[in-house]
Length: 113
Length: 114
Image (cartoon, rainbow over all chains, first blue to last red; front, side, top):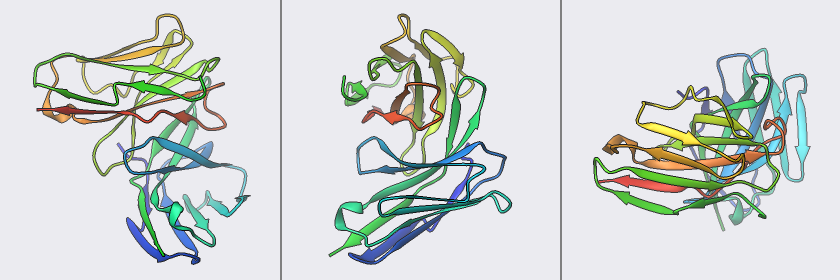
């Protein structure tokens, strides 16, 4: 079953605008990861934030995590047409030997010229 | 290899047929995961290997699903007596450790059961 839900389910913006996606989850986590999936392709790891971190940056990506509200957001600044994809958050729970991921339902982002 | 390789890329099976899906992880990656992604949904965990040991198979939906990784590298996901609800994309991911820094996913195998 899906751990979390993402909001919005779909987002359409123009090139150059910022895109914000939100993720909520239900149980305690060790980390939260964001992945991108282009149509018909596998997932690409974007960024990981640990449960004791509040904010992380990577290039045009900014991720925040609020464990008290069990929520995270992904901000993509100055979007490009190539950012068009589905974005998934995944909560990681450490089982001792692995960080087992549970994915959300995804946000479909469309960036138009 | 440079990435995680999955084959076949597409598979059409008649209901009741057995299928085998292959995953070739990044060389040296000890952890390997299988996920199932239904259309329009996020991936769902199936099973996890550390080297050749299957440490977690809690996500396998029925005893028709079986996975193996006999030599700790290539893995095969086998589905016996396929049913229509098995239609999905099957994703394989590997990581050097236990995925504590993220996974590398393959492009997946799209299985269609007719």
